[in-house]
Length: 151
Image: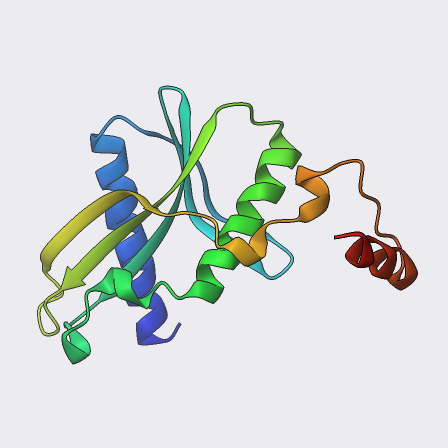
């Protein structure tokens, strides 16, 4: 396994332990559907948290680890979360968290371990209009054009 993969797995282990210490129940780790993945899915009381873990050995470029959660990654996590909710029939509230892990580059000791609840919300482009307007059926390009012309 490559070094960056080992560092990432180590960070996910630390994040899992942090969540357990905070009273969360770990439902899944590295849950995938297709090419989409969620690092950790955890439940606390009446909320299911979809957690993205970012591990860094330095503050490269002055950025915090959370800043490396790009819009594409948010979109992927949100879509994977939607699939998980449908697949497992989750009826609890959900939220999207991040856990930042900063390690000493030489000794691999933890410098910082930070959990941010509600770190991000689903990006606007991940909203499926059919899920919000079930009366709209756009099964073809012609149907889409008719719908667009009515707006």
